[in-house]
Image (cartoon, rainbow, N blue to C red; front, side, top):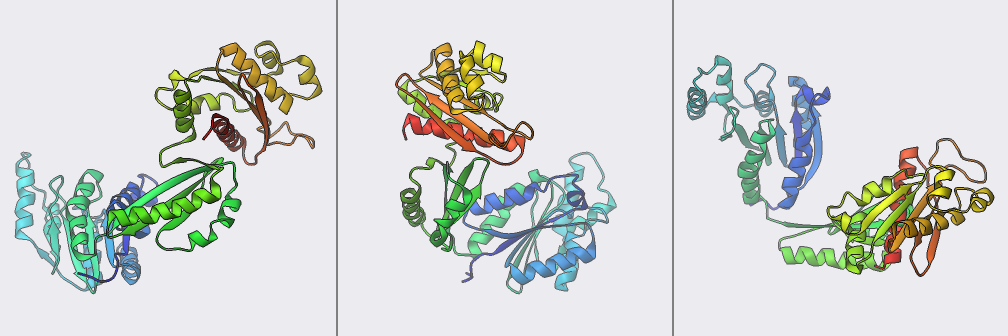
Amino acid sequence: MAENNCKAEHIAVGSEILLGQIQNGHAQNISRILADKGFFLYYHSAVGDNLDRILQVYRTASSRSNVVIVTGGLGPTEDDLTKEALATFLGRRLVLSQESLERLEDFFTRRGRVMPPANRKQAMCIDGGELLDNPNGTAPGQYVVDKGVYYFLLPGPPLEMTPMLKNHVLPRLQQVFPPKHLESRILHLCGIGESDVDARIVDLTQKSNPTVAPLAGEGEMLLRLTATDTAERSARELIGETEDLLRQRFSRYIYGVDDETLPVVIGNKLRHLSASLSFAESCTGGLLSSMITQVSGSSDYFLGSVVSYSNDAKRTVLGVDADILEGYGAVSAETARLMAEGVRRLMGTTYGVSVTGIAGPSGGSAEKPVGLVYGAVSSAENTVPFKMMHSGSRRQIQIRAATRVLWELWRVLGR
């Protein structure tokens, strides 16, 4: 059993990937499947159907990785060069596997066809390597070990590649490398900027196990915690210790874990409180309503919304006083307050939430620039207005404003 850790790399072969004709979906799938078993990809690359360039990619991969997983280029045509390039790179011959040839011939016979001569090349095996059975296609995989590097050649079609990855690659990796358990958790934060988060986790991001990776989203931050250990319990303990530290530092901002989005946690809280919700939206144009209704069962607590884009709609539908609109403007704390109270009364809900602002790119001024947004959360007890300032494109401002409004609602509902 090897003492060094698995350091894997994925190479996708196919000019169609570089031309944008198909997505390189293998990059994500292989990363995820390996990570679930505690193995990690350090590099991804894609190369066209060109022998010299494939050789160059092999040269680079073998210098920095001890596991190289290659997908594509195992077909019967002249531009399928994955196997031929590896044989050339390793200085080995290609030899005919009689067993593989018989399987190929049987594959065509069972379908009432005669095997084309071109398919014969698929039965060629790199000398000293091992063919990997492909029950779902004509291209067998290859497994070759050379100078401490473990090469796996897999077919490109996902329905062929994925079973072979699980049935052939993973068992061999588990035999060669010490097994590890991977534990991962994602903390969701809102109401705090990326730079502020980064500055307060410098000590944690410098650790290698567990790792803490900040990920910026639109209007929120994610902190991904990942730990590995030989035992599941130990990996969870590593995650738990770091999560405790993060919760101490960001208790005000953390609203959810893993799949707990803002609409999900708000929906759970409203259901727990037997409370109902309505929105009055201006600059977001219905985005809040769309976000909250993405959650199945949201009709239990969400009654409806008013997209009051014009001042007339704010006045006639929501009851915002004309003097307020004239004196303070549509984009103001005063208008946001009356919008939230108006929609709560109109819909008869426990909570009314409003948002009004300038999403741009036009419409701003020195006093009220693009990105200025006000919101409010109203209940029978009181109304809480708040001010935001966002940057970016019109769509980014809308998304960031809607996310922040939901976070403010979450705070009012109680953590």
